[in-house]
Amino acid sequence: RAKHEGKNGVRTFQPVMGSETAERMTLEQDLREALNRQELTLHYQGQFDAHTQALLGFEALVRWAHPTQGLLPPMKFIPVAESSGLIVPLGAWVLQEACRQAAAWNAQGQNLTISVNVSALQFEDPAFLPAVQAALDASGLNPHLLILELTESAVLNNPEAAAQQFIRLKALGVRIALDDFGIGQSNLSLLRRLPVDILKIDRSFVQDHREAPEDAGEVYIGVMINLAHGLNLRVTAEGVESSEQLSLLEELGCDSIQGFLLARPLPPDDAAATFGTRGPPPSPVPSDRQH
Ligand code: C2E
Ligand code: MG
Ligand code: MG
Ligand code: MG
Image (tube, rainbow, N blue to C red; front, top):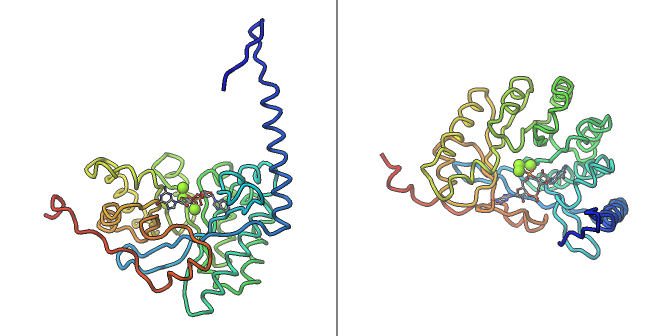
């Protein structure tokens, strides 16, 4: 977009900023109504055993079936939900619905975990713990099957308070995953202070070595897996798109796998249609890695 400069070199950004603010306010108002009109929906992406490729559970990923703009991904509305405080009721709805769905599936003979993303403001809100308890009570889901996924940004503001909150959550029986885990300094120091159960290796590490299998990404993944196992944590890798990535992760001892290779996020009925199926078999180990 061309920048308009006035005679004095004064840029006239005003109209653009004005319309962006208006757009944002409209989005916020729409989102408020969407919550009441039940336009939000959850898609479910399978998480699989890295060795047997058995389905272990699902990550619930929120979508907004917007009346005019179609199905919106979370990055289009979660930021607005956070800045407006709507993330608290939105997050409570996601918890309720994900637990209800998982309990319904498990009542049909499955034993699936359900992973739910929790954003920073939601986690810090006093209503969060009661919302988790309410979702468990209403659904009857075995608490051990609920996994809360938090990123370091959700706990970085106040790691001490976060640690206390983790302890309260774990007293309910739920498990906690550190999402988008990398080897940044804050990630590592948080790990020393927080009682987490699962590390989710960020997809940037998984996908780094897509074109160059010999590059250092593999070393970092190995370090993260060893670190997790040394601390008695389980490791999930996200963003697995190729059979090469899958066999490497399996070889390095990764516990579970999530990614487009095995399953995309799907509406509930399509997700349920995958029960009992296996993902594609891993491709043969490349000859240069067979010693
Ligand atoms: P995340 O928790 O790291 O979720 C994984 C994201 O990676 C999802 O995007 C998923 O569709 C995508 N993904 C999965 N496998 C692959 C793959 O093999 N390749 C690639 N390129 N991408 C893959 P999505 O659904 O757009 O969600 C984006 C983010 O939005 C999530 O990242 C999470 O941080 C947030 N989010 C999603 N649902 C919720 C929610 O209910 N509440 C909150 N607070 N945040 C949510
Ligand atoms: Mg996640
Ligand atoms: Mg993630
Ligand atoms: Mg991510």
